Image (cartoon, rainbow, N blue to C red; front, side, top):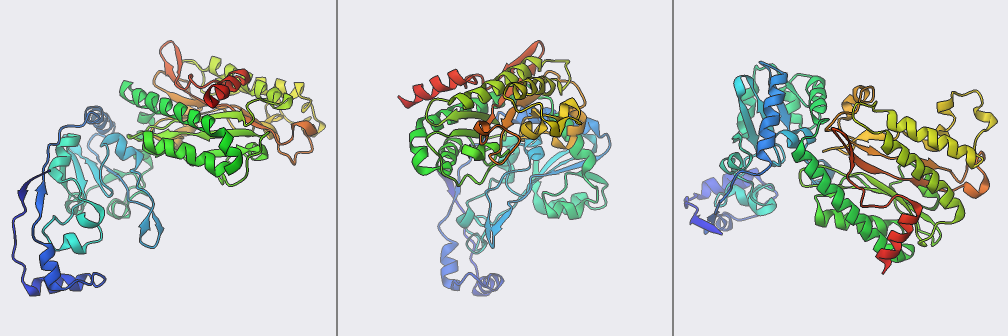
Length: 474
């Protein structure tokens, strides 16, 4: 829809020739360029304030109060270069999205003393201007950008052209999040750590709006696992890349896309903690360890793992290992409670895993007799049980040393993911267990009186997973 014609400017040959000289790669004649400036209309605009604007307005006020009298600069970042002039898909900086919402690449939010809130956004030549044709970032090449006025209405924040940012920050002592935008890094001398850490602390506590986002993303991820279950018969023919593709298609169709490159470990690749090559075959008798998540439109992520038998039934050895990990997972969930230590779920899971290693005949082993009790299992457990989850998969990682030493509190959201991994090359493991890897991961919200498992719709027990696979095979 359009509402009016763009005012027609008469461009002289000299003006057009001068513009063409600035873009030597654009081989257009002045006559063709003149013709390309005519006959355009202004797109109609019926923008209203976005539903995510209000919670972000409140977050900006809280953050500004954390730094009284200080100017804060939070860039969205720019697309990373894949090769030559081709970028990777753009993902805005998490802190910028958390404070401002979805903006164009290169946008910068400035929070100043005395309540100033200004979003600086990229400018673009309008349709009807020769540069709309000549500029490789123009509206005919990459699509039209939202105007400053429209962005201001949609996000509920004053908006100015990015060209004014340098003047605004010149001579100003400011704090910023570094490493996202070279232009901002050059304008602001601050090392970025203090602001980045405080943002991470604030983001640890999810409000009702954020939890609703995470709940939706978890639901979409559960559905993505169901899509993989339906595709298991074809996975044997096509391999790990096919499974990744099935989940990726679901994530892109029903969310913003993948929250991270999925881990698709079949057979002995399931024993590799971060197997993300996903380029091997899948055998009919393999276990398939799928660790994957969907990223929602506001970046809130899920991070879920299940280990399923490709045949639909676990072998005796596979079930033995899975049952131990399942018991550890249940113990970890039981230990996750408000007021408890962040490490309580990990300690509870480790106790069950250690007992399980004894029942399997893996422990005791003389090679580990001199180690502390908590270290004897590490060869086969490989990782801690939990991390925070939010708009980043490993949320608030910059303050992980703080939150891991603290307590779980209402509003915290975490992943709970115990596992056992028996490498096929591990001579300390009974031969019938070698090549078996199992991980079970759920996403959990800490509430006032307990927890909510956001991904509870996805079964965790061996029998439950077998029945779930059978249900989706029909």
